[in-house]
Image 1 (cartoon, rainbow, N blue to C red):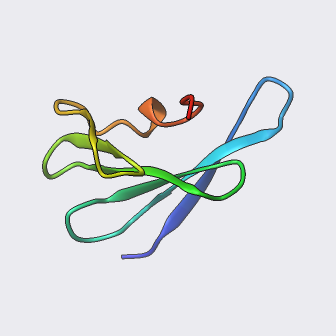
Image 2: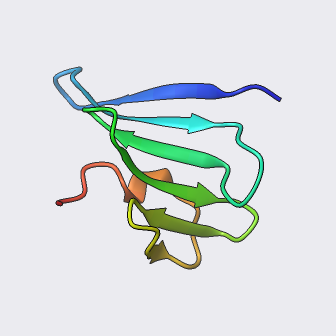
Length: 72
């Protein structure tokens, strides 16, 4: 299994985040903001999304989109 990184861009083609998938363990996806800081992770196994402080953002969706563009 290999890691795959996808960049998320806004309407002006500026990078606003990235999603890296392929991890094995309690999370499968790491989400980063435009400064490459980790903004959270998702788990397909547990169907959850967590923020950078490991707090639950969603308990019924492993959606990286919930973490992109969040206010800090």
